[in-house]
Image (cartoon, rainbow, N blue to C red; front, side):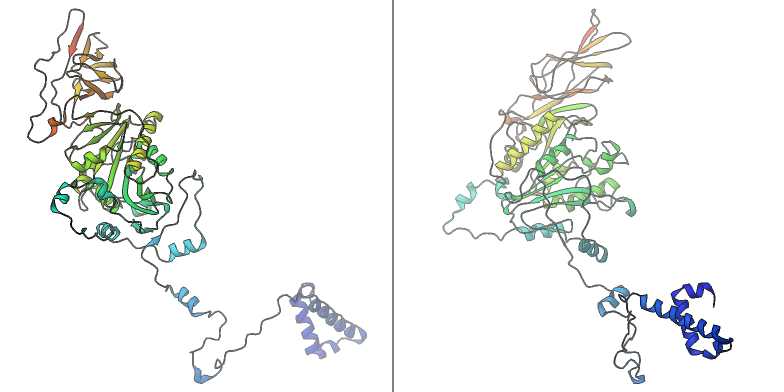
Length: 538
């Protein structure tokens, strides 16, 4: 027997068994040495067996009844690895059915969120791995299911009283929602719950698709569903911060109704710092979209169907575009009585009548019966505290006017409504320097700014063709002839937009561009008020 066999526990056991089983082998050795060798082997084996831990005694698996019965066949598995029927199902890939809609976990949107993602619990991870949630039914069915049953008309109600009720009242429409669970994006959101969901338009490779965050605060009490959208143009940042501040300062337990906030609609443009989608299309010209159309049309269709269809009212947040800035203002189609009423809830914010270009989100929402406005504030590619604060206060005032929060205090001074506006353009190319600021009230023929040719040193003055207010303007920059430099809100009455009244006409006499001896000229455009021009940020 070798040294390795003696020093190993198994080797000692084997040696002892050999010594006891075949004593004749050792008796062949002469004299005392053979007996001593055998005794030493037995002693070492006994010591090793005694020192062996008793924590893990050998298991004796009793054979199940009938395991050794040939008549039983293979009906019973005697192997200890067979496990329970549930374990067998798990090994075979079978699983029990799960609910088609996932119930959202409530999170605290009133406190700052940690930068590190919160890991899923074991139960949540297992549920997500076994059976992901199925898509929710059509959004139209959700809205119908969430609406309470219509109340019967009061006894004695007359047709005259019904006729006096305001048609399509935004407040009345908003109050039709109940405080039942909200089903959106395949998730059930119970009352008094704040949560984060994701909307994915499925327009990219499945392996790299990323969803846009959707913040939902579903109140404990019945009320309207207000939607806030931002960054439909990916380079407009002020709206992102407005949505964040509003949503993270709402208490779901005190809220009446629901606030749905989408901080970044155009996630692809936002990541690239671009106004447009990767295919250079403007997403805000393709709503309500087309499921079989272009990439932009498909994204618009998905967003409108999955998110906007749950809204009773919509505020679409924008900034100026292409190195232009906008005074905080509402763009609203004041011909619609629902929008007119809705626009009165923002307090100290200028209102500019605008039908909205075809394909814009607010125009498509209004066509679907959802009162909608665009809130413009500031310039692109910047976060401006003053404009952000104005937008937050405007929306908080709106929430109070809609009865969604108890605190309803007015802020700011009353602002006028402008029914007409024009863009004043530069007639000469050069370097633009402005003499006016956003929000300034100007008179007709007042100098708005100058354009100087850096080569010839010829300076051209840009004059205002109307009395009004500067609602939008270009930043100081190099401009080309025809560049839209200033947007002037024209002081006029509401009769100018009422059907049957003629539109506001241009002044009878306008200055024309003409080089003066002092190398200075005056330039005004021949504008057509009320037109929707490409320079609109929307």
